[in-house]
Amino acid sequence: MNDLTNQTPADGSGAGAKRTVVILFGGRSSEHGISCVTAAGVLHAIDRTRFEVILVGITKQGATVLMSEEDLAGYRLESGALPEVRDNGTRVLWPASTETRALTVIDQHGALRSLGSAAAVLPMLHGPYGEDGTVQGMLDLVDLPYVGSGVLGSALCMDKHAVKTMLADAGIAVAPWKTITQQQVERDPYLVERLDEGLEYPLFVKPARAGSSVGVSRVESAAEIPAALDVAFAEDRTVLVESGVEGREVEIAVLEGRGGAAPRTSSVIGEIVFSGRAFYDFEAKYLGASGVDLELPAKVTDAEFAAIRDAAVRSFEVAQCAGLSRIDFFLTADGPVLNEINTLPGFTPISMYPRLWEESGLSYSDLITELVELAIEKRPAY
Image 1: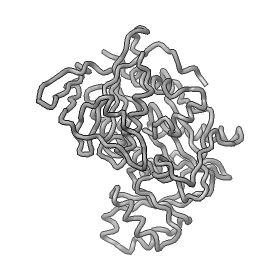
Image 2: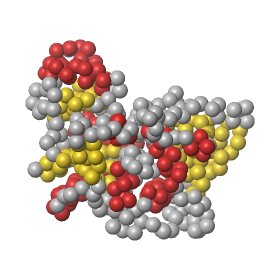
Image 3: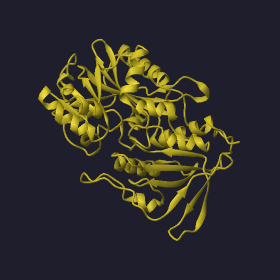
Image 4: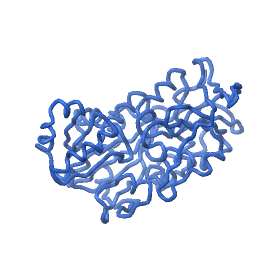
C-alpha cells in the first residue's frame, strides 16, 4: 500500500499552516443519531496540528446550527440511546457565492459573526438529505470542497435499484431483485402476491434509499412479505425485494487515488459472521446487539481477495464514486456478488471502514487527513 501520511498539503500551504474543516452531521434522515456519534469520533481523532474545526449540526427539521465541542462530548452510544442535534437558536450561513469560502453564523440574538474560511467540508451524514447528493449539490453550487462522492455518485449509490441496474449492465454480479413502489401496490394490491416469483428465499425487503439496515426485513415466506413492505415503505416510497444469496458477507474499503491514480483498497477484507442473528441489522451494527461477530482480517485466499478487490475498484469507478466507499459483497462459490456500495459508510472509530484501513496500516486520524486532502486536491483554491 502506498504511504498516505506526511504528504504536502494539496493547496501548497506550509507545514505550519492550519486549514479549517467543517464537520457536518445530524440531518433529517432516520440515521441522524449515528451521524452524531460519527461526528464525535471524527472530532476526537482529527489532527489538530493540521486542522481547525467548525462543527455544524443539522437538526431533524433541517435547521443548520453552530455546535461546540462541549455539545459533542456527550455524543456516544449508551444503553441503546442515540444523540440528537438540538436547535440552539443559531443559524450557519454557507458562502454566498463562489467568490468566498467564508461561513457566517447568526447567533441567538440575531447578530452576525464570521466563522472564517473553510478549506473543506467533511459530511458525516447518512441517508436521505445528506448521503444522496442533496448536500453535495448545495456545496457544489458555491464551489466548496467536500469529502466523498459528488451529486451523481452519491445519488446513484443511495438508490439501490438504480445502482444495481447500472452495475448489472456493466457485468458486475448483483443479487436478483424486484422493485415495487407504494403507488403500484395501491393500484394493484394483488401485485404483492407475485413479488417472490423468480426469487429465492429467504428474501430481503429493504427501502431503496436508506442505509444502516434501517427498514430492512428478512422474509422466510410469502405470508411475511406484506408486513415487511409496511416497514420498508415507512422509510421510502420505493422498495426492493431481493433474493437471499448463499455466501460469506465480506466488506472492503476503497479510497480514491491521488492525482487521478486508480482507486486504492484496503489490504484486507472484513467478514460479518452470524451466530444466532438473522442478518446485520441496525442494532447489531451500532448498538452492540449479540449474534454477530466481525472477523478482521477475514480468511480468504489470494484469488478470492483479488476477485473482491477488482470488483470493488471497478464498481467504484462505474458508479462514479469519489473519496471513499465501503463496498459489501457476498463471497459465493462462483465469486463475489455485490450487495451495496456505501459512499458515506459508518465512520465511528469502531466502524468497519476505518477498521479496515487501520488493519491495512493507515490510522483513523491519518485516514481523516487523507480524505480532507483528497477533497482539497480536487478543488484547489482560486
